[in-house]
Length: 85
Image 1 (cartoon, rainbow, N blue to C red):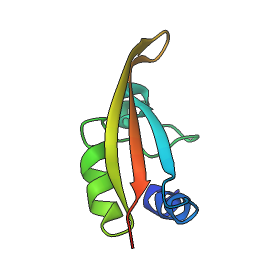
Image 2: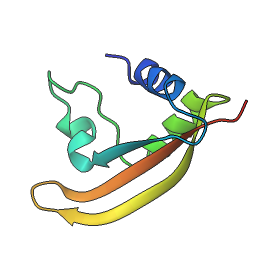
Image 3: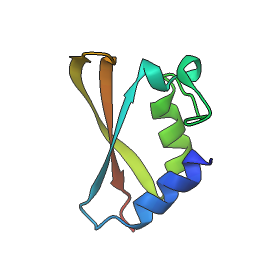
Image 4: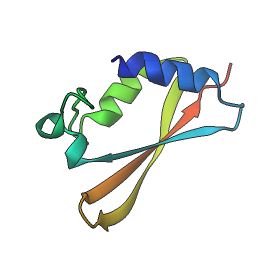
């Protein structure tokens, strides 16, 4: 499991104006990590990871907050755009 490699691969597939939408909740944090989803990152850390991993390839364009979803709690959607170039 390599989330950085996955994002790199997804970003390579984007059209110039395409976006990746990544839904994230506290269930995706370290406390929610499991064999099926071993990567756990607190939602407050995700923007830093996207900045660090995406340098020159992709960038965080927005953070959408649709609110609470039953069974998931607060939801954040990280919008990632392919960098120009």
